[in-house]
Image (cartoon, rainbow, N blue to C red):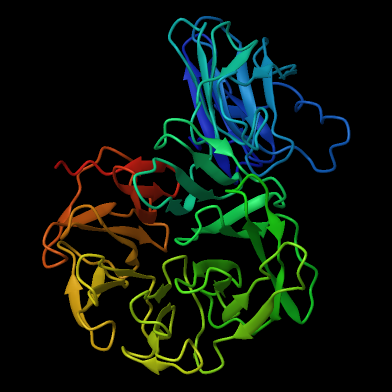
Length: 489
């Protein structure tokens, strides 16, 4: 018989759950909760949808449910993560009537993050006794020990699970700074044991890159991508911020650049990279995924005039930059820049970005660049199909390398990091751009001559960033937060 008989709106089923006593239930994104009738061999609505909260402007959408294994007819139903406000409902009569669950308590020792309560719910799970219920949303794990009446926060660390970039202080300091989606800039003073949100003066939204001056660590920059949509105009604002007090407060230094037609379907136009000039920490380079590369001289003092902006991409075709590792500057070679572009290959400039020369296939997709601190001039670049390019002469010439195993077209090397404390150790991170599984991290102990995959018991999500940390290399994942690579000694 047709299993969807009666489920007239079952275009997007999001969850199923069953117990012998309560029966089989399904959740459809728009039409909500359904119960299967074995007698009629059809799906039926057990009751009306939960009531809209006061002030809600859109119909409810639903994602997940859980059935209490100890109490027949008791179930929980959560709204879809893309629906706001985020809501959790409980029913004690098999879905005929609902009430809202609103008792969510943050842990006293948890860091002050952006989310203050229930967020976008992804999963619900009961313990067999029915008294303990776990709830996972996009930021936290919550636990109820009274059957779902009250929930307490269990996750006390880095809440956001998408890490865009990482920065650390020079020397033996243990601080880590993580640029994350949604939660903004997160700081840990103790190598990742505890975290706090440091967004004083920064508009709420994503932070895509963060930089710390090597000359004056109290001077820091971040590049933000606020939630507030920008009005359509002939310019695009790159939301640059500077701190002169080690991140305690931030000053906005918005940079208006010309809006350009976006090439292909891979250019989003969003900001992607920030790099501090090693010779002058009042100069930063900003790039985006489609609107070019710009050199910005920021005012030396907080009350000085606005920043001076120079476009560096007039002679840089396909100035489309994937992420924070798309630009290399060299303290030992002032004026030398290497740019990794998506659809434009690697470009090299010896005059500070005034002119550029193609040093690879001019249509190559290149996602990341990294320099070996133990071997000046030794560079690696990340490409699609698990390929790498290697240079021994500061990017003048390149030779191709490949990672072991199959090489799917959409599986790319999108992050690279050399370990400054262990010469020869380099890690590369893979990610897929067609929603297929990634392959995590590969590591080389011979400066990139050979690589081996790092075994890890985790979901095959993309690696978003690799960077040196206080005690080894750090890896950020798209959905799994920040990890330390344990490569032994």
